[in-house]
Length: 336
Ligand code: NAD
Ligand code: WQD
Image (cartoon, rainbow, N blue to C red; front, side, top):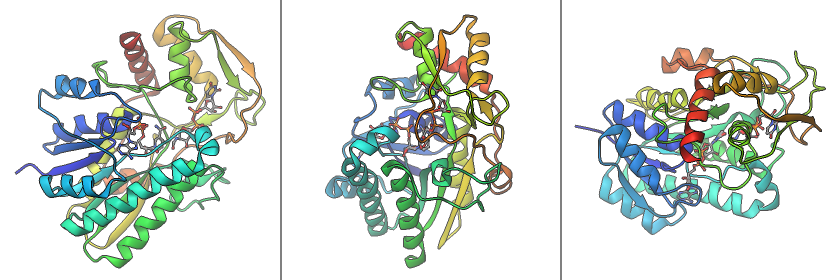
């Protein structure tokens, strides 16, 4: 029998790609989303790709009665919890909204999971928990650092809450996946990232500039101590990232009273300038950009050690930054 997996935030960027991979591996995903940062048309895209009907509950993960009802009706064996607010800058101006949405949704979720004896959880964490790393690549043993934004703090708090809950609950097993920088879109061009307003992330800004929706990209500083002076990040194709979630469910299978956290990246650092030149190559056009000031809060360079993810998840990335930028551009051309 197909296992039902609740995917909170399943209409969002990473969640929607994960729904595709869950279906491909024989799971039955059930999406919970309130569409605060996504569109209902995503479900049509999912159904076109998978040729399956995708079950969706529209509602808020902080609403306890709603969540209890969904869990009672669907009897899931596990949950992948994507639903959260994710804009670092916005979290500084709206801290309470971020703590409320990101922390309360998790508390409600854990309570409801306990009530219905649903015992497997995959949580969306972030490499932001490492702050400015002292050594590269960043391993899971690298120390976490005090978060510099309320958003980052919600991820640290959430990891602690999950870890404490596992200690208290003999049946629960959970993994926090610490994502590095997800980019790209599904190669079909039917789902992708839908940033509202001016994107703060690099790749949507690049594709919108190339599409003529923005005048020019500003590269935030070229005087860093990196090979070309621009920041270095670990950009991972969202389809590879989505597959890591399915592998994590396999990893959790049969485990009880278990908590772990795992980096999900490519292991390779790419600079902002390399993103620009690779994008120019795949899109066969020049990108209008200038070098500007450093952006406050940016880490000079960070990329993941992938030893643990390869070993315990039996997973590795299959797609390159070039693939991701090609797919991101294809998606941008479709959404206009
Ligand atoms: P996203 O905004 O595209 O998706 C989040 C989805 O959750 C959206 O569809 C939104 O409508 C929904 N949602 C938010 N709050 C909700 C609530 N209370 N109830 C129901 N639905 C709610 O974001 P994403 O990029 O897909 O990120 C998914 C997760 O991964 C988030 O937890 C984010 O913090 C984390 N993460 C993202 C990145 C990144 O760069 N995209 C990096 C590291 C970690
Ligand atoms: C990447 C690089 C910028 C825009 C953020 C969050 C992190 C995680 C992923 C959620 C940086 C440079 C960007 C632009 C630029 N999210 N840049 N011009 O900052 O690595 O990570 O998203 O958990 O927590 O902080 O990603 O895409 O914003 O920036 O030069 O217009 O591109 O300086 O070096 P970041 P990003």
